Structures are given as structure tokens and as C-alpha cells.
Length: 343
Image 1 (spheres, rainbow, N blue to C red):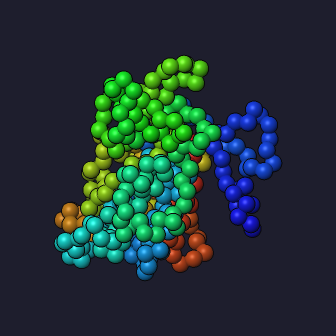
Image 2: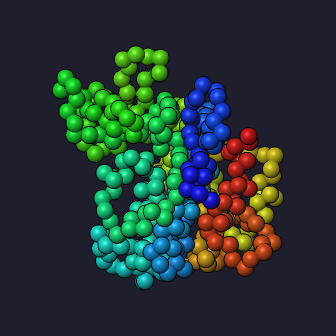
Image 3: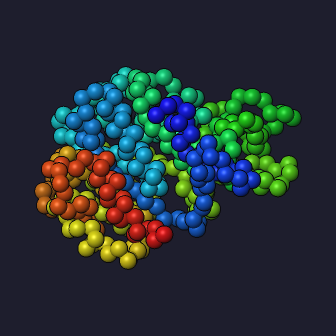
């Protein structure tokens, strides 16, 4: 396929050409908000997912596949937990050097945070680093907060600039569009902000900084994911950023019950914060085995399921001996999506 054909097939967001179709471009995709929501979906992924990757490029593309799954299924939080044996974890790591083969948690956090950020601000927020040397292999994310030139949304992500504002008051903010905006607040440069934009029909309106979750909680827009690290499997649960923790926790395992029996397709779940945990090549049991706190409690092997409200198998009778974690994420999130989205 010729390069021009690839370009024509690239997805456009929220373009408006007066309702006229353009055969040279893919159909316009508009991001439509759902109802405002305060509930969240979290996913936990172990560091061992890249244990079998032998090259920088393999590790980089694996992180990209995880990020795409998070974006496609509108996941709000990803937790990277270390499931390696504590004795094998390096005591001293140079985080200015490449960490894909020394500290997988740092490497995955670095790349996932990079991918979540709008492209126009990455160069400023993420200085040159060996972890990003193969960033050209990473996929486009195209989430709602990644702006397109022909797109208007009521919220924007912005990056504060050193440029002095007219009149000397406030802060100039780059929002990834041809023109910057000025806000009334004085904020240090190189700070990422979430802005509520003035209505299109409002002349002279001023953008206003809001909480990063406001697009979701106030307007129903999916607005990317946060990235958190946990040193053990148990800390995934105990260090939840949400008050009261996760009120629905789901562990995935080939030894679990079929997901359609645990969660019938016609039934939505009642929860505020849902966590879906995935294991690496050796499963969540391996993570429990390398968790000192769980070892003291005797939660090992088959008892690992006691950590979760539900223990499910997303694909019974699989045709391969092993399903990679990035594949399991797509399968499980698709099979459980009806728990929070009945559309």
C-alpha cells in the first residue's frame, strides 16, 4: 500500500466539514461523552510481562500494546506491580540509563506515562532518555485529550510556557493548537494542566484550570489513564489511590471460573472502583509467591484467589498453551466490558 493510502486511512477525530463527505479521508470519528461518572476501571499488570523480551525493541512494542489496550477500553488507572523474587531485584539502579533490563517497573511506567501524555508536550515533559530510544515503534494513542487541529472539545490538556502574557498577568498555555491561551492563574512553566475551555459561542471567554478528573466526572469524557507502581501484588490493593480502595476486584487465571458464568452477559456490576489484575507468564500465583507479606499470611498457590472478589478465566479451552498478558487484557476487557458499559 502506498504511503498516501496509509495517510488516507488514518483516523480523524471530530472533524467538521459541514456534513459533506470526503472520499479521500476516513470517516470522521467524534468523541461523544457518556454520562458524567465517578466510577473507575483499573488494570494491574506485572513486570514479568517483558521478562521474555530479549531486545529493546521487543520491550518497547510490548509497552505500546499494553497502552493501546488501556486506551481502547477507556481504562482509568494502570498499576505496574513487581512480581520478581525480592532477592533478584537490583539494589541500585541508574535511572538515567536504560532500565528495560534492570528495573522493568520503571521502564513500563516511563513508557506508559509517555504514551498517555498528549504528543505536543512530550518533548518538554520527557527529556531524551535511553528508554525512549525506540519510541518510533510506539503506536499512536488518539485519545480524546490528544488534540487534532480540526477538533473542539470542552476540555484541553495544556502545558504552561515561559512566554509573558499580554498585560503581564496570568500564564500562557500551549494546548496543542495553532494559538495559545492565557489563564488568569500564575503557574510555573512546564506544568501540565487540564483546562475547561470557554464555549465556542462565547466571545472573550477564558480557559480555566480544573481537576484532571473533571472531564470524566463532570462531562463524561474518557481522559486517559494514570500510571502507578506497586512493589508487590498485595500493594496493588492496599495502596489504592481511591478512598475505600477497590470495591470490586477481579483476578484473572486459567484456573478461574469462566467469565460468562461469573458475570452473565445481561448483568451489569454495581461498583465504584473496579480492579482487574493480570498475571505474567507464570500467573498471579507467581506474584503471590514473591510477595513477603502474602507469604507470611499463607496466601500462596491456589489461595491467591482469596485476594480477589472474583477469580475468572477469560478464555476457557484456549487453543494455545500460553496466552500473553497483552492478549489476555484484550480478551478479558472485551468479555467484561458489559459490567460497566451496556451499549
